[in-house]
Each structure stands twice: as C-alpha cells, then as structure tokens.
Image 1 (cartoon, rainbow, N blue to C red):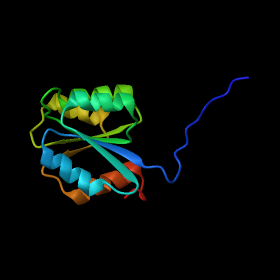
Image 2 (image 1 turned 60 degrees about the vertical axis):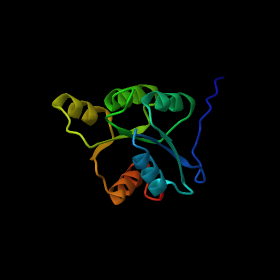
Image 3 (image 1 turned 60 degrees about the horizontal axis):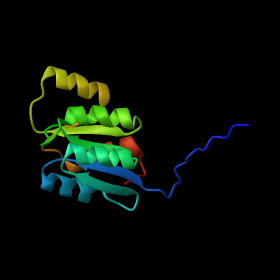
Length: 135
C-alpha cells in the first residue's frame, strides 16, 4: 500500500511574498504596503539571494526587478519557475524592454508592472494572485 503526504494550506497560514530589487526604497515600500497578518514578506537585493530563498522556502508570489546587479530579472524569473512552478512571478521595471524580453515575460510571469507603480495596483495584483481575502 502506498501513502501520499499532502500539504494543505490552512486558513490561518501566511502567504509568502519575495521582493527582489536592488533599490532599498522600492523593497521597503513594497514590503510595508503588502505585509499583513496574512502575508509574510522577505526581500533581497540580488538574484543569487533570491535563488537561495527559493531553494530553502516556498514563496507564493515574487516581485522581481528586471535590472539586478548580478542576474537579469528575466533569467531569475525563469530559474524560479523551474525550481518552483507554483510560484507566481510579477516583473517590475522602469526600463524599456526589447521584444524578446516581452515575450519571455508573457510566457513565464503572472504579470508585468512598469515603474513607477501605484501601491493600489500592487495590492490588486496580490488579491488576484493570492486570493481576495489575503490583504
């Protein structure tokens, strides 16, 4: 006889969000805007730090800047999706994207948000991605 262990997220369990951006003000503002009794937030300034987090913990949602000092946000997004397919990724950037980057974002991300972004827009994305009663 075979048994399967199934993890069921309880109503009282926190959702986990990872923010990856090299700008401290962006990380702090995002974290402050979305942290709640239902959402735990971790932030990283480097793509390699984010990959370590993904390797050791599950995240429900990641916000990733396209321009990071050590990895491109596009490459980071792909690597996160390979390691954790259920993690939803939101790409954020202030720069113009080439056609290839746009195609990759459409293929692998949950959505894209240009900077400067509106906190209400971020909160709506979280509600859609993680559930209406998350915030």
